[in-house]
Image (tube, rainbow, N blue to C red):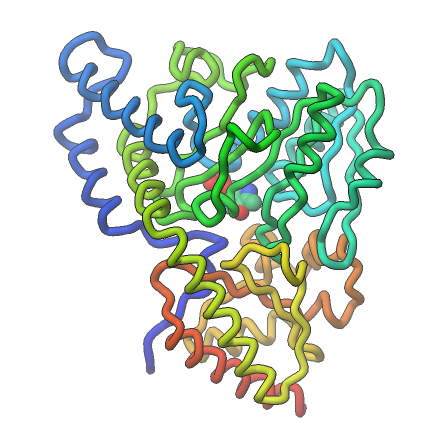
Length: 381
Ligand SMILES: *Cc1c(COP(=O)(O)O)cnc(C)c1O
């Protein structure tokens, strides 16, 4: 059979060869503990701070405001739980949305068990939060708002600047999960009115198990991990140095190639949609038509159950997803599609294609042709 085609980069990505190359010495030769005072430690410390500087440059941020974590999930938990606990004297109300990643939603549920009140903002049928809903939800005791940048299932980008400016005027701490946006969209922490921002390495061709939380200077925060004084006492534990060095390299490469990557993803999307349009199959694109992540394409092939379609695509060597890696395997409808109120048929037939650096336009055209054949056959049945 032909080669496998991977369209699930929103779930995870392969590690870039240059990333593997720069990481290797930090597993073997430069193995020191960055907290040690001897030469081994000093070398490790230097690499750690260089990596921090490189990632801070991409984010146009002060390097000291970056805290390395074990990934996007930990960064989200730190922001939501650490941010809320630090402000609980002022109030115990938190606002988020119905379409967040589970790392935010389940952290909010945890806060609820601690006595916090959570408001889950609805979204419209494009997956966008309405400003009016946020304005109505804000109370005197609201201490934290967490709204994602780009959604991982349908790709919709939220009006983060507008939301941030509104919250800044009210001195409410604002966190955004930018795991999908990072490396794909330009992000300037000098310009973006956001207090906390989560990122992850393995979504941008870095290693798994490493990420970071941007924490704006003077934002009160309660650490989740207690122990050593690493990361300026905001996250205890010996640093994952090889992972962090690899993360920084992945960010450097993403930064160099960002514009070309985005152009390619847009061409891939257009190519696939054109092939499907011309094939005369029935489909609907989910997510916002313009404010959408360029590497995510969520499509409903009407009349075909998501699981049936995924299995048939897998047989044709095409790897895509139902939307979220966490709910796949279960027949449960995605909370994101549910919140978008698309109707049963559309929600139960949604497929997420997510693109990455190893995909080509030619490969996407081939895959789209195969998908069209599968859809034609199944829509006839
Ligand atoms: C993948 C993802 C996460 C979790 O990041 P991990 O590094 O896998 O823990 C959080 N939020 C979004 C939007 C994601 O896509």
